[in-house]
Image (tube, rainbow, N blue to C red; front, side, top):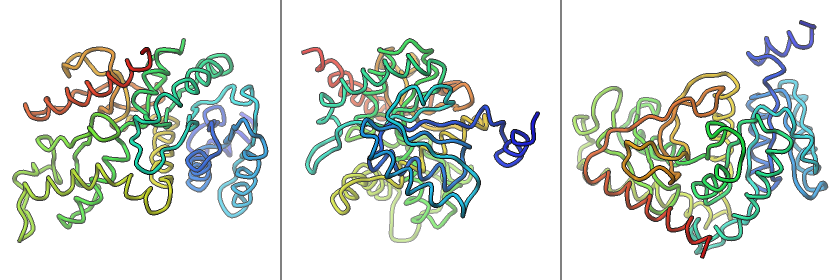
Length: 329
């Protein structure tokens, strides 16, 4: 092993062979993903791809200026898919962005064809890379990516409801006055209006939420209603104020990348085809808890849920199926 490889392995906890990440799209989300990867030192090389080379260059050069103050890394701007070859992970952020008043599903038709052509190119140049879909509507676009790719299905997943779950855990932790790491609860289903919280499987530091001391002046039912609604509307509320969301999702993606590169086997609710035990069919893609590792999706987990939660899951699956099927009409 030469000195450079040894130094990179010591610094990042991985060999240089497992440290190249591609980011497709140099818009707000893509640029922030690339920036987060550099700031947090998640890999050795980042390739920021955009069809408009000057846009990728501007973003990459701006990020590059921070490297002397951080860990040694390399960021490359490109408009050539070939530069993504040998990437361990490729993050797809391209697509039309939501406008005020639009839901994530409203922009589906515009982004479906972009996803099909992008996946075709990635299959050509990087057939063994793990692909993370971030573009919205993420669940349906992940389904399109899976359907149009030749790579193994465990190598493609979407960012799902990871960000929604993080939002909920943070706010709920503040309400209950506990460390956010001790809040174990998942938002599943669509990353969008039909998502829901699996309250029946919520634990605070190993204690079921239903048995945890609730702050005076509030009830469990009030807390559940308040924070489910806050989580569902959080992205819209941020976009109304600043025009887009980018910091939260870029941190989510950097954590997913880190989990893959370090083979950490952490559990995240990502966009995948539902296990048959969920009872929503075998084709719909939506946010469900999975073990993420160097294999991509190592294993999907079946989260316990009550009858009301099963109904909400079926409703979310129906909405996503209808959106996917509308592309053929």
